[in-house]
Length: 363
Image (cartoon, rainbow, N blue to C red; front, side, top):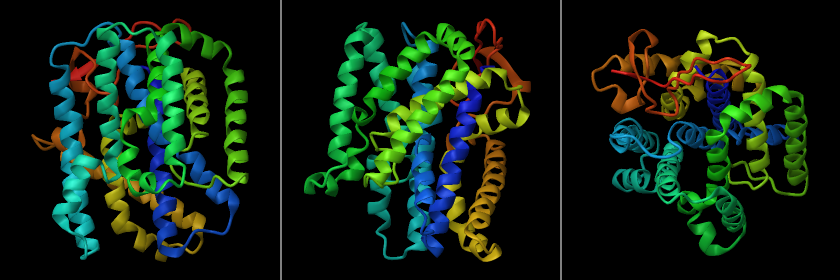
């Protein structure tokens, strides 16, 4: 098992749940008048692009030259179908909570425009297509990396301006891969050369902390200068996301292989899709049960996590459960080596050699 990749996935997943716990609590009782509270929320926005990075990094590590048979069928079944299922579920729940919503319009918007929390899946699927073209035509990264940075920078600049057209279609304009292009090229390089990179990261792991601190200060100075939007489309989140990923992959090599990390890791896609819906129903109670913002947020976070994991486990027992919450792998039933999804990776790992990667599929 690639321990540090699992750890990165888990920390990103928990960060997303915690961020949304602050959002749901704030929507009900108001957000604290504290710049550091908002700054923390901005920092937590690194999590979604981290999922996107991890997805491409795994793909580039395993399939750097060609894609295997049934590649697209598996991803459609266990990534895109769950996306569609929760696009419908989200629309139904929104209709139930807000009766003035047009159910059909909301459903179509969710499916085609990713107008709910599962939108990142559409970005990941675009990365898969982009990965195919990169390896199909052997596009050199020395050319694609600078192009991707310029294109992403321009796209994010537009998303953060007050141009009327951009503001009107901001939700739709965050979906094209060009808004995340730089993440793709960096993740591709990290995945393809991870055997070398992992050794360097572990050797110079203390330097990753310096990079992380520096990237946090970049976000802090941006925030103080008036860039206060709490979203993952901020340009200053790019160095933060990369530095957090490198730091976790460096230090994660020395972390024991804990069962709780493996559990949350294999449920991470389901957690991402389910938790927001759970919070919509639980948040009104947690703000009543607890008296302070910090306990309300942590209470919502912990209760959401427990309920969400339970729901995913129960759904996964159904014959068609993987089409709802994604593929969850039971280590006892692993029979054949193969990578199928970015959230169910297994590896025999040695922190000194970082070799012998094994990817497992549950049949």
